[in-house]
Length: 105
Picture 1 (cartoon, rainbow, N blue to C red):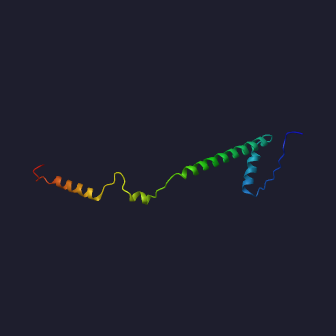
Picture 2 (spheres, rainbow, N blue to C red):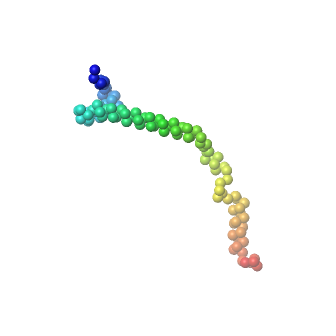
Picture 3 (cartoon, rainbow, N blue to C red):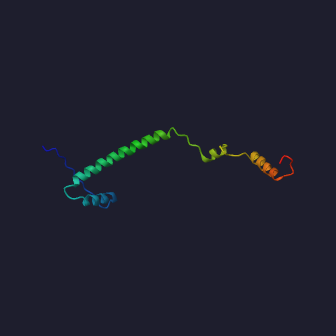
């Protein structure tokens, strides 16, 4: 017995994906279709396996991440933030610099 397997495929051209598949298959030269279909199936399977591995890795990594909302983040003082009292003090110093009646200047 030959080491071949036969698969019959009936496509419904009113179904968009099946019509698209038919158009792709029709564009492949006769004699090359079996190899092209096998290659497409294998590549699709590899792609799906890779995507599932990436999704699993991302899920695992994201489980270790702690998200902070923008509101919570802005409520806490940040490096470079200046207190209103400091700004008032600096403004007072600038105004004093303009006063040249001070004997130290």
